[in-house]
Image (cartoon, rainbow, N blue to C red):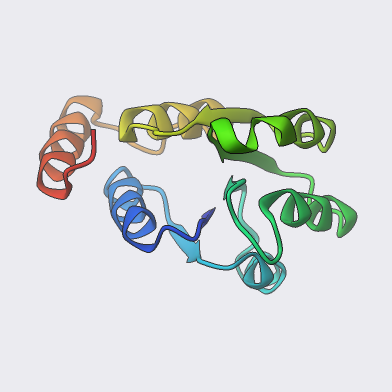
Length: 139
C-alpha cells in the first residue's frame, strides 16, 4: 500500500490511478492531518509526501510520522520554494526527494526503487502507463 499525501487533488487522483494500473494499491490524503489515521488504517509500506502541504506542513507531517514510529519508506515531492526544508527532511530519514514538476515516470521509478515492482509484464504495463498519462496530460 502506498499513501500519497498532497494538496493537489487532480494530480493525486491521476497519479493514484496510474500507480494502481501498475499494481500498487494507493490511498490518497489531501491534508496532512489525515495522515496518522490513514497510516493506522492502511499500514502503508511507502508514503509519498508533498512538502508544499500547509497546516500542518509537509515537514510537520514527516516529524509526526517518525515520532509515532513509522519506519517504512518515505519519498518527498519538493520544489524550489521548499528547498530549504530538504535538509531537515533528510534528517528525518526520508528515502528520496523528487523535484517538482515531476513526471509520472519519475514517480514510478522512485516507487520501484523504494518498494520494488509488483508488475510481472513490464512491456504491457509501460504501454498502459503511457496511454493513461497521455489521456491525463501528465508528462
